[in-house]
Structure formats: structure tokens, C-alpha cells
Image (cartoon, rainbow, N blue to C red):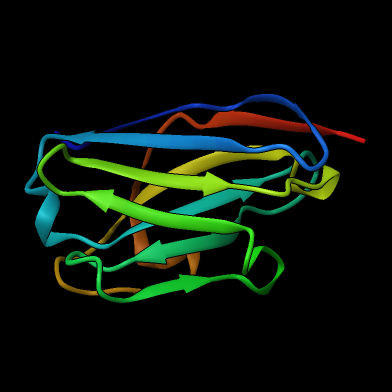
Length: 125
């Protein structure tokens, strides 16, 4: 059974930093691309970043380029999102997702089929 557990969210002032983690279990982590999505109240879940199963290919949405860094530690079955220079518009519940199929990668919601419970990030101005 696939399980994903996010942690690391919190309240931070604008310009601050947070590091999110997503610990995976129940499947072979190294075979699957992983992604971070976020959802603000009243809005749809949106793509933030993705990393391929081997860490070679990385995507970011334009609004976080240069501020966020995605990474993974396949030995620890853990995905990370380092978020710097946070802005109030980054406020959302952040979710990690596992690609639906092994050795594939996407930037859209249907490409991911397993989700964690989310971790709240709140950036105050």
C-alpha cells in the first residue's frame, strides 16, 4: 500500500524559508517520479515541481523558479522541497504525489495517482 507523508510546513514571514519533506513507503521509491503540488483555499490544486525517478530531470512552475529546489534521497525514500524567499502568494496546503506509472514523468495532476495528506504553508506579509 502506497503511503506518502508530508512534513515541514508552518508559519513564516515573507522572505523566509521552509523545507518540506515527503516520506514514502509501500513501493519501490526509486522507480517513480515524484511531484509537489499546492492548493490554496477556493483554488484548484496546482503543479509546483517534479523530479524524475533518478533525479536527473526536474521541472518547476514559473512562479517558483529560482526560489524553490526539489530533491530526493532514494536511499531514504524521501522527497524534499526547499522553499526560499517565500511570498504570501505561496500560502497553500502542499502535497507530494507519486507518478501513476513507473519511469514516467509529468507536470499535470492526472500524472500523479497517490497523494499524501498535505502540509500547510502560511506566509505572512
